[in-house]
Length: 341
Image (cartoon, rainbow, N blue to C red):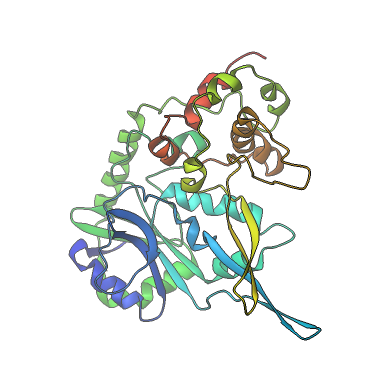
C-alpha cells in the first residue's frame, strides 16, 4: 500500500502530466466535471459526484466523424482522428467505473466503435473510494461496492492522505512511474475507511432498494403497466436525466456545412426528446408516456435481456439530483417493480 498526502496532489498530477494527459474532477464556474487538467486547475477530490459523469472522456458530447470536400466532380472523404497517446482518468468513483463496463458492452460489440475503442485502450483509470456516500446514492442495489472502486489503481482518502493500490499490470507500471512521490502507507487506515464507507451505505435512504421485479425476463410484464401514465405525467422532457447519466449512450449524427467542407459529427441525444429518432414518417414514440417508458424499460429490462442480466444503471443518483420535477429511476423501480401485472 502506497500513499501521498493530499496537499501534494497537484505535484502528483504534474508528474503524471509529463507522460500522460490527465483528466480529473476540476472546478470551473462553480461546476465540477471531468476535464483535461492543467497547472493551476482546482481539483475537487472532495466532491463525490461530478455534475456530468466521466463517460464524456470516452464518449464525448460532440465528436467529428468525417469530413467531405468536393473538388469539381470528385469527392474527397477523410475520417476524423481521435487524439492519440495515453491518458489517465484520475479520481473516478465506483459507479462511474462500472459505467465504463456498461458502455463497453455497447461500443465494443460488433460493429466495434473505433473512436471509443482507441480511447479505452489508451486509458488508465485511477478510481477513488467514496469517503462520504450521499443520500441519493444507491449503487449497492446493482452490486457495486463504493468501498472497492476497482480501476487500474484503487485509491482511498484517509487521515489526510490518498492511498494507492494497483490492481492491474498497467496500474503497477503507473505506480512505479510515480514512486518517487509516494511512501509506504498503513493498510489499517484503509481497512477502517472501507468499514466506515460500508456502514454509511447501510444507513442511506435507498439501502433497501432491490431489483426485484426487474430484469431480462420482466419486459413483457412491465410494458403494459398502467402506472407508466401516472409516473410520466410530471415529465417535461428536458433530458437532464440522460445528459447526466453515466450509462446513457444515445446519439445523433448530423452534417455541418462551413462553406469549405461538410463536417459529419455525432452528438449526445436523448430518448426523452419528442424528435428522437425522427424519420420521414415521424417518430416511433409519439407520446411522452412512450418515451418515458422506453428510458426505464431499457435500463431495467432491455439491457439485461441483451447483456447477460447486467442492468444499465449504476445507482449514482445524478438523475435524482438533477430532475427539476423530482422524477427518477428509484420511484419507477419501487412503483412498478413489485406490482402484479
